[in-house]
Image (cartoon, rainbow, N blue to C red; front, side, top):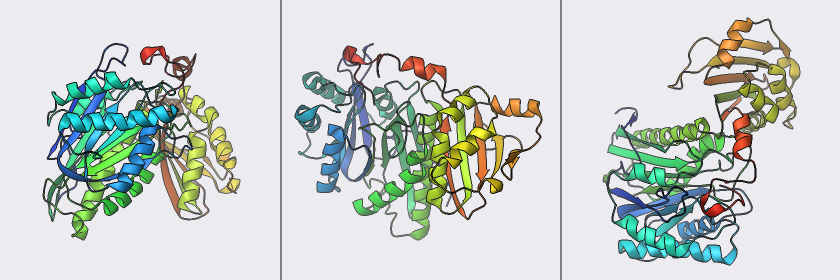
Length: 428
C-alpha cells in the first residue's frame, strides 16, 4: 500500500481505457482548438456536481437529466470553449442535445451516452454546424495521450492548461485517477465557477461515485474563490470505467486510499484555478479554526476571502489585519473580538510551510511585529493565514487570491471581450 503518486503530464486519459481528441470549430479568435472529446472504451458509472446559480446553462440541464437517467451507461464527454451556451433559450437546449448526438454518431456509439460541457461567452448561440464538423474532426485525433490537448481546448481566459493524474496501490489493486479543469474568473462556490472532469479506471457503482464526488467537491472545488461570482455553467463530472478490474468499494482500506487519490486530484485542480485567477499575483490559503461548527468556519472564511478590501490589500502587500477582523465580524456570525488570534506564514511552491508562523494580532488587538518581516511575508507569491476564533472545534480552509488592477482591466467593456465572434454578453 502507498500514498497516491502524481504522474508526469497526467490527465483524464492517464487511467486505463480513456482517450481524447480535439479540433477547431472556428470559435477561438486565433484558430486554436476549441472542441474536445473524451471517450471510454467501455461503459462508465458517472456522477456530477453543478452550479447553484438559479440560471443554468443548457449543458448543465442536459447533463443533470442524463446522469439521473443513465448513470451507469455513459461513454464520455463532448466539450467546447469560447461559447457557454447559457441564456440561449430553447435553441440552447437543442444545441446541447445536438452536440451529444453528433459525438455519439461520429464515435459510433448508442444514443444518450455522451455528456456535454460548454464554457465561454454567455448569451451567444452555439454554431452547431461548425461544432459538429469539429466533433467529427476530433474523432480522427483520438489518442490515449490526448488528455492534455483536451485540457487546452477548454481554456478561455486561462493562462495555463490544468491537468493532473495520480496512481495509487491499494489492497485491491492499482488504480489511476486523472483530471482536467478550466477556470480563472467568475470563481466562487457553490460550485466554484469552472469546468472539471475527473476519470478513474476503478470499478464502482454510480451511487457511491456520486456520494464521493459530492464530499470531495465540498472540500476542494467549493473551497476556492477568486472574485465572488458564480456562473450558470459550473460543472464537475466524474467517470469510472472499471478498466483496471479493481473494485474499490469492497475493501475499507482500498476505499480510503482511493478517496485520498480523488481528493488529491481535485485539490490540485482547484489550486491551479486559484493560482491562475485573472490578474492574480498571490495565492492565499485561509484557515479558520475554533469555530462553533465547520459550516461556521467555512462561511467566515468565504466572507474574508471574498472581501474586496482584504483582497486588494493583499495585492498591495498590505498586512492590515484589521480588515480581516472586520470581514469576519460582518460575516453574520457572532464572533467574539477578544478571542480572535491571527497568524500568517509564507507558503512554498509545493504548498508546504516556508518559515515560522508570524503572529499579527491576538485577543482582538494587534501585536508589535517587525515591519521588514511582514513585508517579506506579504510580498511572497503564496501565503497562509490562520484565524482562531476560540469558540469551538469547527475548522475549514478556503483558497483564494489577491485582486489586482489587471482583473479590472481584463473585464472592462463587458465580459469576454477577447471571446469568439466578437461577443461581449458575459463569460463563464
